[in-house]
Length: 373
Image (tube, rainbow, N blue to C red; front, side, top):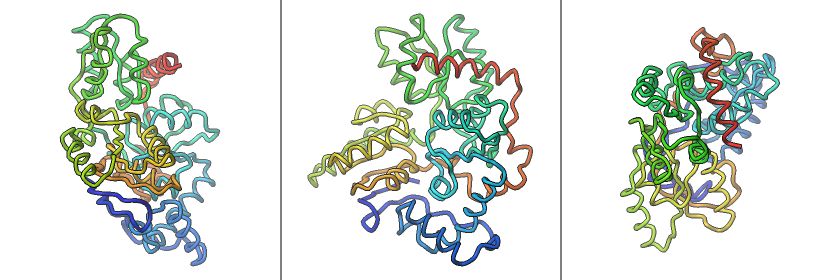
């Protein structure tokens, strides 16, 4: 779903984003009083900071579920983490920590709790299991995939290595555990340029994102040859430089100097039009920083959840202008899925990886930690 415009905060906000999710069924009150439900509804609305989209009525309907999830977390000793692209009722209603997949996996590893519930897509929960093999990792939505992760297999990596013997294979973190196990080093959207620069040799293979790979080719031109796999994020592939130029031109006609912040999973023509390129966490932080410096007209070229986080985590008045695209995979998980996984997880909701895969995949992540320093 594309957003057409987002202006300011609170009452001036206009955005074409997915509607706030209502409960999928009747769950009752779980025994909570009207006063408890009202306090929780107000807490949710204040935290989310989008009262037009997340009305008090919607927050009231969700409040019993968020309270019950938070009660079960404490009772069962569960650390609940959520990716930035999850819906605000999850990120601000029940999550103990919200960030990108790399940061969250490290938090899962370091948390004292022995059970981790990862509200995200599958590869992220697998990554958490790789770095925390002794912990129980729950993933509420087993069918929540990723176009990048689902577009490449371990056999694809083996074939690439056979055709290019001795050439190191670099995999973006948006890959399955089985793929990570076949690669030499894993990277994220915030460290892939630095790590690839530091790899020995004058050739490397980058998988699976062709857009990030193209950006890497340009960055290393004259230094290294970069062989790129033909995969893409279906969300970020929606953005084009032409669309951004059209938005910039329209804004200039109204005297607005638009700051464009883009995720590196976008194409080269998008990045050329961008003022800042970075991970979802970087984009959120930079948007908030720009607003604090008076640069309030901002276009976020990434998944819609980043806009939700910017709105919730800044006190500045700002104008988020332009477009965002919703990830259908990230938006698969609802509060009901989390509640069910906490109550009685199915075998499919428990991340179970072959110990050999964990051992081999952990090497590629360990190498990332080493080279990123």
